[in-house]
Image (cartoon, rainbow, N blue to C red):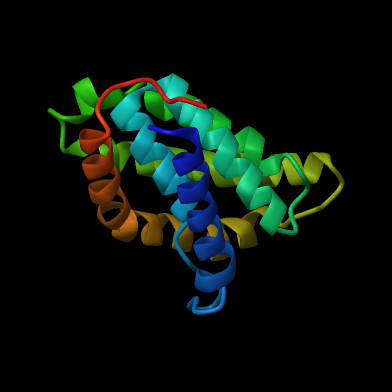
Length: 166
């Protein structure tokens, strides 16, 4: 898949997440489309492309958010690598695996986000973060995962198995 197409797609996902969904959210809750996209692509194409998608998606989100620069880059790159370890060979034969990856990656993403923010001097209350951010995000990510996974599976299938070209 062409690198410019990837950057355009991830930019569109980042704008949708940070500008559109943030405005139409329910109590500030909305699915993390970028995280779901990175997980879906990583399960299709493996850790290398998952890391590239995580890095590019993290850059796009960091540029559009008020979070410290690099926060999403680090977390999404790591999520892309870890989810890529499940890759398509296992994903294709297992219905439960994508659900498990969405749960594990969402919980890990938000816990690591809180830890990094606290390390940088931004204190966040753990209980409030779990109840008001992590749990609603987890529920929404589970609901929206088929909406993200199916088109990316189609895209992966139709772009072939060639290496990502930058």
